[in-house]
Image: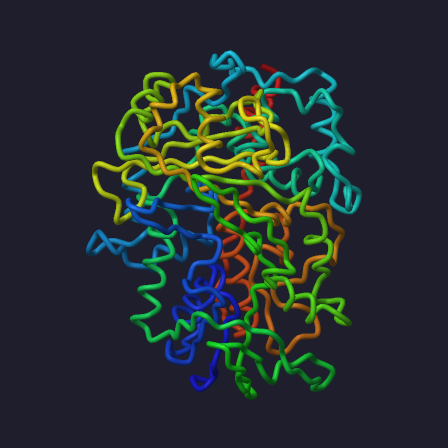
Length: 523
């Protein structure tokens, strides 16, 4: 590899951070030759975590981790030093943390009467089982751009399984049948324990503090340039020997226009599309502003690039229907233990052992999760933080007579306390920050082959894609693993690195896993 080659990574999410690490570790690209160009003020992309005890903490989301899957993620983090445990890697500390904190939910679903719903049975009829088997065995060409509802009857969407599976992974009935099938196979190991979430693993803190910050710190020690407040607006390109070649990167920095010259032998990695584009925060007194891609512009670069280049994908497939890709989350900061005490009394789970608690009859389909405390690295001992979300923010609440999308943090707490039958005094010290995410499940929109580009697209010489919107056979979007795997594939192919990428573990081909899933389906 030419050590004079430079690499430019457009977007500062986990995919770009991982790509930079793989170039350093496996591609012998000097750190000072790598630049990450991020439009926001902070690096990390969708794996965010911000705030303080005074103004309140905020997380857009929390990604589910497992150590039984996530092969590329742990291959990466076995190389990244911990920020809080000297001599250990991020992988080491995560494994040790989960050996001490086991997931075993005892209140996975709660009904309208605030009673725990029995979840030992998945609630399937024989018709449901037959249809589910047919979907899981159909090939992707047959499934094509169909929705889950094209394959499963209405009764399926009232089963305990659907409520647990859909809220664990954020599926909606109108989402892609292909993605749903991929999840069934990739996480078949979780099928038999979905009611306890026993397979879910957690980082010590939120994933920004536990994954992004250590990775960012290591990259900085290697000399990688983190260029924030830098919006890439366009590319210059040409064709050489029939191959598409990026020759320049147009940026806006501090109100000034700049052009980065991309020379022969340089590389460009682009995060095409963003599931958290146009996100907006509210407050205790104000609902989040309703933004679209027009106000944010995060999709614009991919749209420009894809125009006239069929191998670069079709962004319109994913960003054209906010009503089908939007949901809302909220982060609650508490100055006393009243809420956590009552939740422990109700659920039987100490914080960090229960996973999602879903109110299955709520109009918003609201869920909350109480993580092990502290959840932020700078969180004081007398402060507690929990997170929640709802899949139907456009619906009128059960206790608040307006859609969640129009609710302030105070009104969201009122709705939550209504479902739990808690007095509002329980959250008297709370600061609830809601977050609207119009494209959060855009990766799940029904799609055809070719709608997503390959990490290293056909016909490209020096441009690769790293995001949730690339095509990777057998793996599933809306995971940290998908971004990291895309990064590893793109880097290895573009730099011609002769090292094997960890394969997707074929749990669905294990006879024991198949038997366990079958037994669960017939309970």
